[in-house]
Length: 225
Image 1 (tube, rainbow, N blue to C red):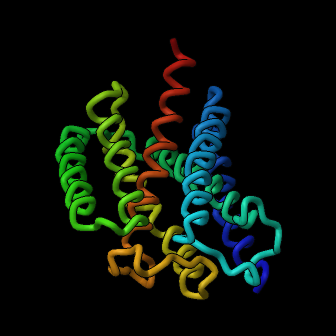
Image 2 (image 1 turned 90 degrees about the vertical axis):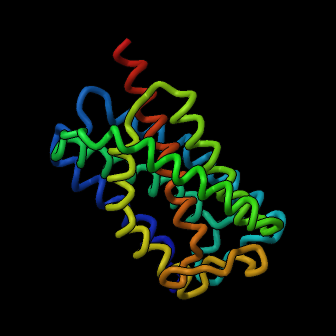
């Protein structure tokens, strides 16, 4: 029981290891770009976890961890933030190599705009549920910056990767919420769940993927200049 969280976290890294067998996935320095992007995403979302825990919105059952904590957050959560981001980038790259067609990119802005509207709705109706507000404020900012400020275009491929990433997402977070290793104050949630996972966590996962992929593409673009 104490090692379940750790095993789930490390298990996520099996996907990047499997993908790494195909040398095209992380060729030409892409591995370093993926590593750097994953670290940045892990730092950002770890900081969010620390803030949520500080305000007693998020908590952990320490008895279900190996007992190593920093800022009251178990080591496994920091590792999970990194492994989730690295797995997201690896899956994104794998799908790009195996399915390079990008014809549907022209529809990605419409989907992003739909998500932006959804974020605004949740921010309006979710007040003052702080877990909900932080979730959708983060996603709104990322979507706006990527689509309307940034020049990198990758959103269709990112959305495609997210759909596939939901499989390991449900496996990991389903267990964490089912056995109450990860706890969120119910009065800070909308009360909507999928497989016992708060709906907010799906959008946090999307935010983590978008930040990771953006930083990955940013590092790649700088290397080719």
